[in-house]
Length: 351
Image (cartoon, rainbow, N blue to C red):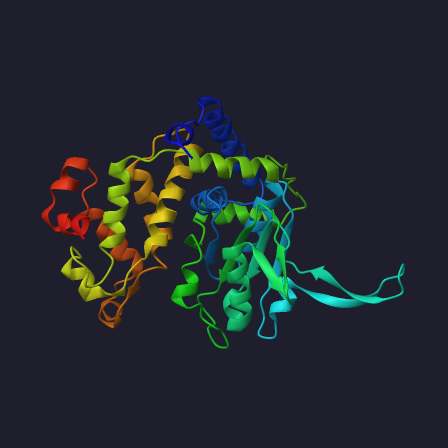
């Protein structure tokens, strides 16, 4: 794609997307109270062609939130309850032997699994064995499944939201860090505020049932995903993103000593890609074609928190991934002149 094509994002397209974003939030709020930041991050991931790992205690409406997003986007939705006995074929589909009434011969016919939907909720992904987890993650990455010797393309758009419960870890299979890296965002779903919970209590204990109206079709979502790729990003924003991510890599040139002391290892190139794509989408949803360092900062936590691993020393001091990211943002200059003149960061750019 030429530079001219990359910059060809019309003001009309940006305005339409900004208005659609407002209508989406309006429809989702009919059912979901609060959680505005979570909803925004879900939509950013969808329009960036990414997937989301949701973490929160039971009862925070994670499943309802995902199904409501699917309804507002006029896309089909599938929920898979992950259990210890769930097998890969249970989610991908399987070949069954049937008799062809025309020829009288027996032949295999592929029966699609629940992955063949636009929006897939993988509920409690850490409760299923690694083999089934790997089947889901392969589908997320390749957007296809292989059954026998045949490759089957998945629906498009294809958006996976996986949930995991931070409590009740007995009998669970934790996602390895390399597999968590397949998710664009790791989003924490937190408890509602007092006023939000009062509204939830009033709304969910009455006979009133809100009707969610679709705002965008699957075809329109695909158009938005294509538009996101056309948004230009300045060299300064790219350099700032690289500076943030490369500082997390233990033992590399320019890595701060406190990072070497606190982290086991840091984020790879996929973090840079996801930060930039997410920042492009965030800019468009807010009616802009200019991507800023503020967009990068706002998405740094959901992109990086599952890609950096605090070591035992950090954990013993109560240092979490989010605290590391917060300090990185505080200590990395966002202004171009300060970023390029920083001696320590100069080692990163020269590496």
